[in-house]
Length: 617
Image 1 (cartoon, rainbow, N blue to C red):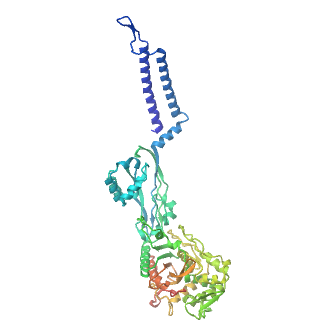
Image 2: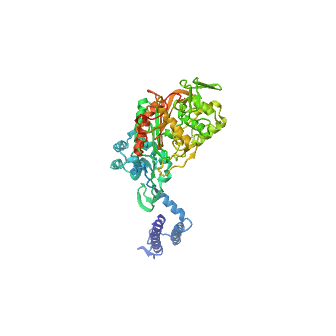
Image 3: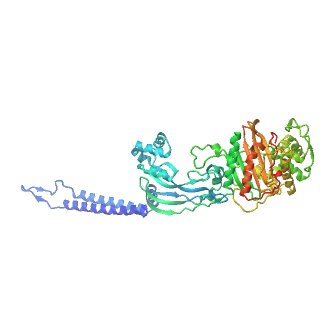
């Protein structure tokens, strides 16, 4: 029965009782006023009442009572059945009725093999009415409550008394069921425990930057939870209830069921995610680096198989979370890539036919002046081939090749490769990096950009760009969603150019090569190191970003692994030295998990590749 209907019945019943009482009293007064008079023993007249009421007055009182009653009844009828009905209903509902949200069950996030990365589990929310309850809570109850919540007694007391005039205050939200039961057992007056849910992340810190987390209202705030919030959330329901003055639910009026969210299947392999995290942790600890990142991508589909960042965090325990640990460095941190950019300039020169792999380039005397600026190599390489420009990582050789092409042609190549654009990866907060328009390049800028200075990129952008070298010259978009379809790319280089570039990078592991630490037994490998100075306050400082990007099997690449170590302070700071062990461990596991057959049956050539990690590379 609705609130307004209950009020109408109550009003009518009270009116009937009031009318009966007035009628009885009026009849009694009327009889007394009209009663016959008697004579006393001494002959005088005496009224039956000690005080006589004039007949006109009693009749007036009677009519006033009747008129008042009719007015009250008329007003009640007007409010209940007239134009004020909606107003009365609203007032009643404001005081007693509430519409409570019924949250939908959030969908799960699973990896490519069905391993659960995020799920919804039962929890409890606890609230109190400070206005009614604070005066009844004993100090002992308050201390026990604070202990169960993991708070200090003084902090909890201060928090509650600051809102002592409120009628509703959350004490805790999304706490586990066992803790809630212990709190309920304290018997605190006015404390209410409600059913709730919270997200659980079984892989914890290992997949934190991929999965992200939700807030206390189960809305995605980071990672896949944020990027796919509408898919995971479903559609919330609602529940109309009547509460008493203490806020307790006494009756359900109606319930609209919630619609559960959909599951999201990721391309991530949680096994490889763990391997990447462990390998990266060892390198950062060994070289006392500030941070690091690893990305593994499938060349055929564009799927991201692993993405690890350090420092990391545990999404299940965020009470003392540091915001810098939440930052997804793979997507948000821009850096100067160094020599990992060199293959693109050489590939473009091969593509338009201005050089061949055996074309000679003079790099003596080890320095090159452009305008008022001078660039150099670590030592004089002399007259070398284009292939050796890559294997020896010559800044001068790369710059000379770049300066043979129009700046706008190079800019268009970089643009198609994705530099200067936020990756279309369906992930929040992906940075675009910095790539100045080629029309504004000075010759020195054209030269330095060719070997990775004067441009800023993210590690994810570099992985995407390298798909053009790992495939048939076409670049593809990357994705965190599992897919079985081959990716469709945008042609950047001719297929034969991509094959030539892979061969150049493979040649760096032969006699005289500079990348002996990169090795995946049974597989050919191709790739490139990068070691670039960091910029602070607009100036280059004696800090480095060491990186390596490689692919395997090099004869027909299936996987790309990119490693970036930020500011190593112990031992070497070169990309080939620091990043190689991480690459080896991650690539070997990735090839095994994917079931890819070895392509190198010659033990003497099973070592990997890459340029020696030198300061200029």
